[in-house]
Amino acid sequence: MLEQAVSNLISDDATLSRKQLAMRDRESELLLIACSIVEREGFAQLNMDKLAAASSYSKGTIYNHFNSKEDLFAALAIQALSKKIPLFKSALDFEGSSREKLIAMHAGMHLFSKLSPILAMCALVSRTPAVTEKSAPERLEKLNTLEDLVVSFGDKFIELGQSSGDITLAPGITSDSIVFANWAMAFGTSSLVNNATQSSCVSRQHDTNIVLQNLNFLLDGMRWMPLSCDFDYQKTWDRAEKDLFGEEVALIENQS
Image 1 (cartoon, rainbow, N blue to C red):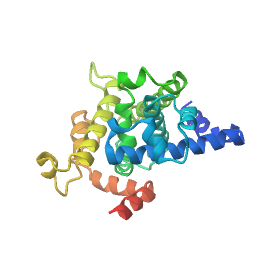
Image 2: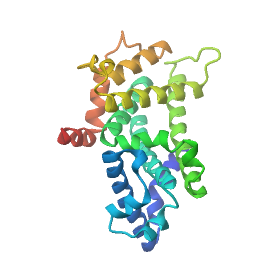
Image 3: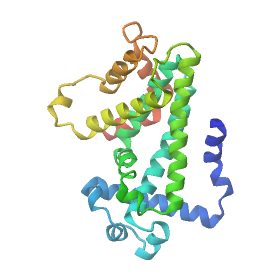
């Protein structure tokens, strides 16, 4: 079922008309411009007037794509989730133990947050009441569908850990709670590392893979085997970057 959902997501283009493809390409262009505005001025300063001024399209054309700036935020979140799903798929196919696959997923997520920090933050912005109350219903439906797919991937990592015997859930601990803990750790750590570089708490972690460090704290606490004291997961992280995410690593290096 998970494989079919991903296949449907990837094959959507084949069912689009020429006009629909043109609309999709124009929307992608507008989302790219919106990201550049947020990068310069912040989320609070993004509005339809600024988007029109920064693009070659009229406000009327822009409103054909987004019914409000809140709907625009939801569209950015959809784009973010659409980019994340292939990373999850690659990590599930990564060669290694269940914990190594999960670490590969976190490596991909961290690279995504470094390459696209605005899109990464949209996971939070798009779920605020101010956005959900004013977004188009069909936009929210697609956002919910993609988010459910991402959560299903999270469930799959837990299932692999359980079926391999690498982790046994303690009484009262559910797959839902572990998926959320992983998401919260990954999102929170990457957000701080990428956006709070002047914080003394962050700067004290100089030359430390903070995401992997925090992930090992979390997974060791869950007794997800092998423990980090018995296995070098930095090598796993490095292998995932090399084998799965070489293109993303190269893009980041070129930005430096």
